[in-house]
Length: 84
Image (cartoon, rainbow, N blue to C red; front, side, top):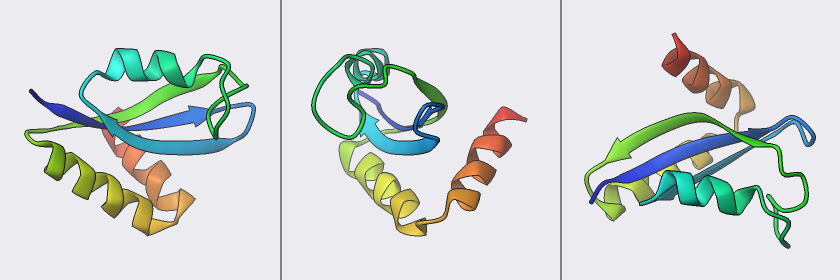
């Protein structure tokens, strides 16, 4: 089983969300339903980036690395690089 690190973007909030999962399609659906929490309520989360890893530990480590940047510009560079 592979795990995906993903970056979502909400136009409404103008914010990024970073996470990891074994089922990207299911997880994206859960982010876009009305629920309590950071991603709940807007329903407009869009996948901007994903990266596959072999193990849950690798995915968690990469998620932590990206979150540690605490820089919107670095996240946008990663997203742009993947789109080119």
